[in-house]
Length: 146
View 1 (cartoon, rainbow, N blue to C red):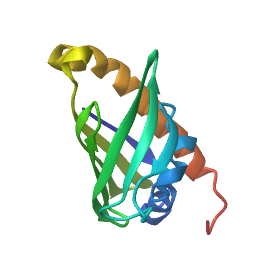
View 2 (view 1 turned 60 degrees about the vertical axis):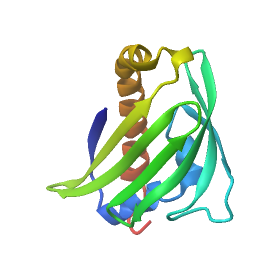
View 3 (view 1 turned 135 degrees about the vertical axis):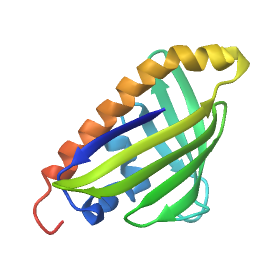
View 4 (view 1 turned 180 degrees about the horizontal axis):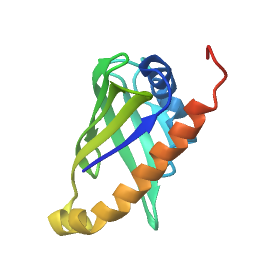
C-alpha cells in the first residue's frame, strides 16, 4: 500500500520533521507511544516498540530502522504481530517535497491473514493519508529557518 502528499517545504525541512522518531506520535493518529529498545534513537539499527491503536485493535508494533538516508529515505522492518516492511521516501517536486509512504504488511492468521489485510487496506490508507496531512500542516506552519 502506498500513500503520498506534497509538502510545501524543502526535503531538509521534511526530513527534520520525520527524523525524530519519538515525535511520530504527534502526527500519527495510530501511534500512541514509542519506546526505544536500542541505545540509538536514529539511524540504521535503531529499534523501538510502537504502541499502536487502529479502531478497537491495539498492538505493540516492534520495528527496526533498516534504511537511513537523510533527506531521502527511512526504511523500517516490522517484526511484531504484524510483520513486513515500510519506507518513507522524499522527492523534490516543484513547490516542495513529495512524501511517499509505502508499507508491505503481513497480517497473522488471527487477524485474518491475507483477507484481514485486504479488509484493512482501505482503512489504513485513510488513516495514513490523515497522518500525512497532519505532518504537512506541522511542517508548513514552521517558522522559516526551523
